[in-house]
Image (cartoon, rainbow, N blue to C red; front, side):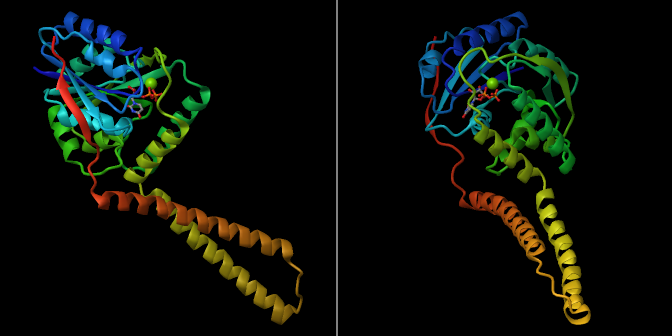
Length: 311
Ligand code: UDP
Ligand code: MG
């Protein structure tokens, strides 16, 4: 059985060697030959590339390096790795050792029990700010409420997937990659293993707040039309309330003959309705922007160089 391990890297120079050492001992101890390690360089600006080129492959462990033409982001880097993988099963793992390589045999065990997807679910997360943990927790629960796809909570991209799942992923044309959602959408037999998420070994996270919000929006817009429904429903409610207010305004003008000065209520309703309109237009814009991105049909990523590291 062939195994592929896809490792997206963005400025991980200090982590490459320790990661490789731990992967290698896991592979050797569990006799996971042959395995190919696919390092995807997502436009690294440090010495990560040299570090990968300096790794020593051995009998049964192939090292491949795919260099993207610039930084395309984590999800696209993983997609590039999946596109180039050849194994019967593919592991997706972060390069910063937050995902322990030692868990891979356990994931594979469940694959052999007949599953197509085995994801690693974090029991707790060390070394991440409470704000990141809280927003992640909140986001995954919100997402699972507003989508019909059962996207697992507290799960990143660390997982093993079978070849047929990889093939379906490669056929899914959308550009807003949200792999954990797409994989949940695909179905087949999926299960999970729990683990404790470690701290990043060295270096800084490549996921800034801006990028996390981007990923969250991609996840929501790709798997739910709920925000559009909220816009529509609040539109209906507001029109209904406005209609009642109109009736009341006419009634007080012509029947009661009292004209209120009414500045406050006027301001409030103008601001409120204006706010709802802007939010709704914004939500629609998010979807239209993504449609336009997909219509352009640009390649998802460009490859600068691709090679196998020679011993
Ligand atoms: N990564 C990437 N491109 C990016 C950002 C990150 O390929 O633009 C890689 C990074 O090297 C790591 C994985 O994606 O292997 C997860 O990123 P990170 O650890 O920064 O995310 P976090 O764990 O903080 O969510
Ligand atoms: Mg990390």
